[in-house]
Image 1 (tube, rainbow, N blue to C red):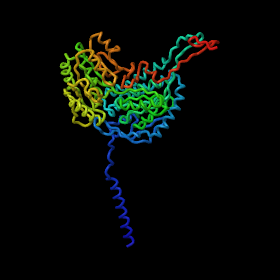
Image 2: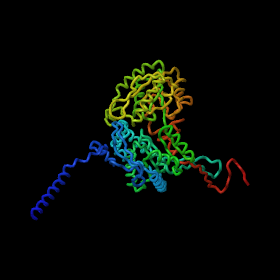
Image 3: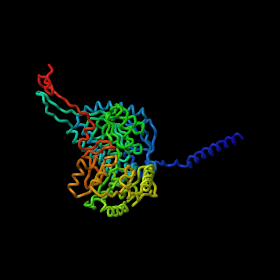
Length: 542
């Protein structure tokens, strides 16, 4: 009986163990991650060091104790990956480390700083395709524009390398014998850089490369909806700094929302704050910075116009207006939002432009054949629809588009609206979407006045063969914008010139020309190398 009980117990244990093994063997597989970063077709994201959850703070080490945000692909609204944002404690720690890093960086000779920036450009060049792919995936712009945006950063690095051997002020003639009068330029210190979603790489590059060769350290807050781009770019820069045994906090990152942006604007330790974004937010930033007598560089909105005169070459006009209005799905600060046509060619141009719109290839932004992708967010789609409805209510007629495209993602039709008066409130409002308002004018004076009557003053262009008109356009009674073009679109600026605008665009200048001066402070220095002490203006004080 005892043996029977033992054998039954042993049998029961074997059955129990077998059932446990079977239960483990046939347990349903854990569901695959819904994040794109974990799916095989997006394995290339790992080349940029990205994973399911990424740290969004860098100050020599990676971290982040703030909110975790998920970024989404605008082409299908699927989640890509998560980023842990900066807390205010992270921000405080990062600013302190950046200020300490400046003590090291400011001692590096400018040409040596240029060599570091060159290495950053070279490393970006090696990653240009994969980083361009990420821009397309997370921001939504087409692949060729995504790659082109990284190329802008590479180009400004090359520009900054040359600049690093040219920065300096003049020696001026002194009215006093035995005296030298010179201008000395020094870095401001810590440059805060707040960038927008539409150019998540290039605008940071414009600021970062120039600020670095000038001897500044940088603190970057990108748009929360393009946090992965911010992380990926910072990883590339950190790699260069670490390889050169330089403090990583020279190029710090604090991903975050309005709380981090507000902290930067109010922080007296931020010696220059560069802000790119909407006019409304830019105004708030400017007031906070001015309240502490700080320095800001603002690159805000643009309600940009193309003016086409009767003598214009329409073979240039149609492709220029098309690219300027629908490139980046109308989400460039330099996008053409108003098309002013001379009354004698109005109907002809509208007809040709409508046909061109019908041929735009719409699709996934990473498809090399696509020319037009999605808007960045669902909120942008609503803004588009609201603007189209307002345009109709104010007397406009939709000549093309005006509707949402029925497919996954944030797709809307590129849109042409005719028949509105030049001073209609919707025409006077910048809508960050692919809506082009076509206006009919009679005279040059009228067209120039309409160009200038909007509150922003970013970019503008005319199409004409009249040499006198061209120089009137460029002169004091012509365009009041920061970018004034002839026979080319409003968008697509080169890095060699200063980029920025007047009025509600903010007045800041970034990129080329003498924009470097905004990242430095100027001192006028008088040196007496004589044994006498003559005073200026011939004053005798004896």
